[in-house]
Structure formats: C-alpha cells, structure tokens
Amino acid sequence: MIKIKRILSDVDSPFIKIFEEQTAKISEGSEQSENNLLFLQSLYMPCKKLEEATPREIPLLLIDLLNRVRMISEKSQYYNSSDKIQGLLHNISNEIIKRCKNQVKVSDMLDGDVEQCMQDL
Image 1: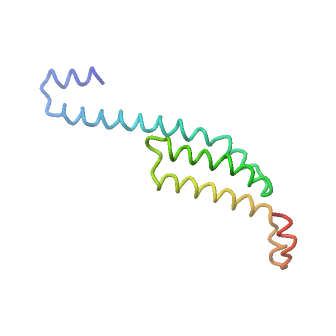
Image 2 (image 1 turned 90 degrees about the horizontal axis):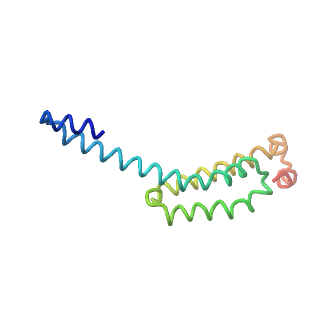
Image 3 (image 1 turned 30 degrees about the vertical axis):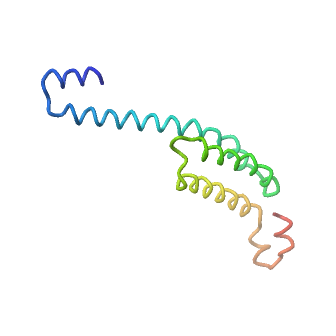
C-alpha cells in the first residue's frame, strides 16, 4: 500500500486522496472484523454443545451461552449494537426450536398425545 501511495504521490495523481480514504476504510473494517471474531469465537463451543443437546440439556447450556452474549454486548467495541445482539439471540432461539422440533414426533402431536409430547421435551 505504501508503495502505491508513493507512486500516486510521485506522479501527482488526483486519485491519491481517494486511495487514502479507501485505505483507511479497509483498515477500519479489518480492525472491526478482528474484534468481532475475537468476541464471537467465545460462542463457538457453547453453540456446538447446543447443536447436539437434547431439550432436557438446553436450560443448563443457556446460562453459559447467555452470559457470553451479555459479555459481548458489554465489552465488544463493534458488536454491541442492539441489532447485532438481537440477531445472535434470534439464532440461538432458532436452534433451540430446531432441537425441540427434532425431539417431538409429529405423529404424537397429530394423534393428540400431549402427554407423550411433553415427555419427549
């Protein structure tokens, strides 16, 4: 980048200002991405456990998972907006729904066997 900037400067290019602005945007985006990755990596193992959990195991996993989301919300420099945290929580709730759906048999629901569905969950 420095070499390109030097060449643009040497030839008195009108594009040097645009180049500097774009370079700054790229640097800022890279910093933001690294920071987001640092915080989001803390969710990997808890989400992996959630992905394999039975409905009975989910409540115990949620304590750690939601504490990590709260930590991201409070400590992350870039991933702390309500929209981004809401997106995380939405994805977590979708996974919980998926885990529960996989546990309940459709035939039990359609037959009206509420007790069996409750037992499955």
